[in-house]
Length: 568
Ligand code: NAD
Image (tube, rainbow, N blue to C red; front, side, top):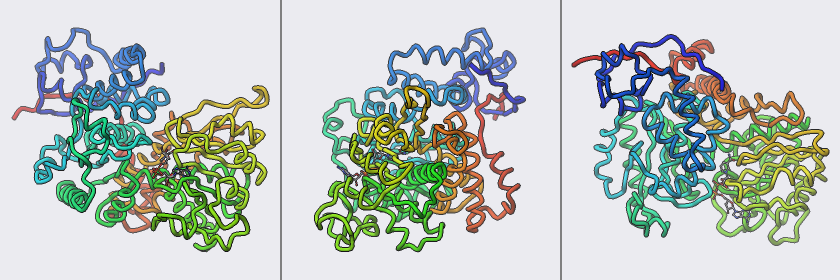
């Protein structure tokens, strides 16, 4: 294991001593409190006599992590560590990002949410429950943080691909905020996970005697909107300048809430905008690898929900930047949902889908009825195929072969999570395309061997953690007043430039997770400069150097401080 070297210690005066200090995860250092600190802070006898440094603690914690028999128990172990000693938690994660990220976030966080009420140990974040709606100001006053910079909020209705988990969805804001600190260097002391508990329609939860949420069916009518409104109003009043991320809301609410609030505070929806930025970045990188211009390609998106529409919109923006008109850009983007190609008469067509709905009469393929994926891939002469439908193995052999017949390097991204919902196995996509496809996935997949093991293709993971922590860091450091679509476009461009596949054949389209902090810093810079350009940044940031200095100051690194007691 690589040993870490701590920077010179920073001295901080704190008003905590004894057990109160040891039970505060932001300050607790456990066995790393020195003899001098044990004197000063009343810790003698409360800790074993040996004084550790953080490297010894990391070794011990990693051994304990390895001894946990299942992924869920590893998750419980890490969450427990987070609730006791945040610096050690993040340092351990930083040394084992590829191994531990799938534990604290997808896919294991999904299982943790499904069992959240059963593995519940200790509170973290805040619970805003519908029956307590008149107490929202009091609830926010109870937040044990003096300064809050980022909130991630969910109502638990569409947790990953797992549907309604009610209050058990709290695992998601906790996990996302851990990634903000791990990947983007946001000080965990300034982050706040929130669950809006508006009930659940999950029968299993409603009948579970251990369920920790409000045992009631979901509030869905105007009472829901009123509740969210009261919540947002109070958040703005209590934490002016806050960055609020909406997470895992059902499709019907995700877009509405984003549109309603995006001009009232600094806010975004990661399922829509973050996903789009990562996917478009990977598309841009793949197009560069295949030496095809963005405007010369045709794009099929399979699954026209939150993620699919978000990707379509950002792609459209990108194509317009490349010189196409809006009409021309939309003509290149083909959306396929459960009834086949979206068209003007598709049943229940949503307002956000309609810009991409085709006029069937104007097509030179199809027979006027529903047009399936294979026919669209052929008819549109698609070179890029993105899956966000949740339909496992929907990219059948004929579909992949049709993509391979359309162009030299078909770009095929089955993005749906978890693995059972993934539209195609990378190994099969590569085999069916004669090894020519450029593949990235939503869930992690190992490398694929080609030509009897002569070459190896790394499969990049379109993980949203490549973008949202950097966007958050850029917004906070630049003091941006709003989060704009242009910031996500800049984030996508910055990420695409860091693709290892641009310099090494067979390499992943996305950077290594172990480089994530450097990736976030680069994205944050691009986002911050966009805030400056748009006149949304703190006016004191008047140059690239000023932004860079602010970024470096904002980026938190997990290291112990030296504590002195402050009485009174
Ligand atoms: P969503 O529910 O908003 O959208 C899913 C869409 O798929 C809906 O429009 C639905 O009608 C459509 N669909 C259902 N059955 C279909 C079928 N048989 N054929 C075609 N379309 C069908 O969900 P979402 O938030 O857009 O997420 C979709 C999937 O994408 C999930 O599995 C999610 O895990 C994944 N996702 C991946 C990433 C990533 O890789 N970074 C990010 C976000 C979402």
